[in-house]
Figure 1 (cartoon, rainbow, N blue to C red):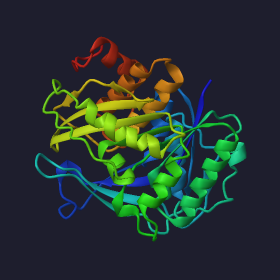
Figure 2 (cartoon, helix red, strand yellow):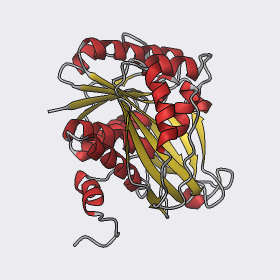
Figure 3 (cartoon, helix red, strand yellow):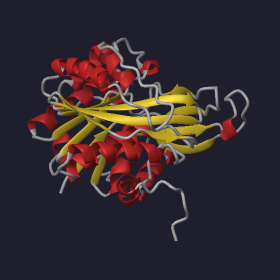
Length: 346
């Protein structure tokens, strides 16, 4: 059976309620998240054996993070305790024409002060088959980026499949390295890659195709994506599968979403979902990445895997918080039976 290990920083999320601006609110809703922990929770919810690795402060917040992960059946045996503080992000949800906004408070966090040699990667990977990280894991600090590279080196030597979510976050790259130098170097070590249409353009400098779906009838411009992804494939010859998340924001509450898989010159397309009431768009890409990993470890069918991953993302738009808590049955019901009516299940 597949076992997936994910690695990155887990954060305290503080959300302004009721679409208030950060400058308006005097209280916040507290929850936890972070790209790679989001992937781990989603995979565990879908039914895969999953281990999450990070570094947390040895205090109530750090220990509560572990409790939350365990409550979702995520393995926590290799989480380190140490450092001064947990990373935080403040979220202001958008409304209609006003976009959402994020403010980070992650400097000198327990994860930011993580360094190579701290994590026993050989034991962490001993019964694993898959390792997943993202560009964020390398964005927080130079030492954390080196620890991420250490993990990739050991996972590679131990024969794990390696996947990467590009996760370009411009606000995070403040320690002197350029994302366009670091992320490609790490991503080229991967077997499977995931990113949004914008991230492939930002990281690899390829032309960004246009996705402007106003509804589910939109026809994806396949040739434009084939051209762009063939250029990425030339830059990353080890990688065999390139997944692309496609989102068009009609407004903050109404989005369309789809996905593409590019593999060996062939392009697979997912349906376009018309999401007319977005509950929470944080973690939508992570839901796609988790669905991608689950599908590749469950189905011997790339088209089905792509549909599964895209449907995970569509459902995540309807779930509050970072974590995608959609089950395998719910996702398969959406893609196999078109069960998106929202009726009460009795």
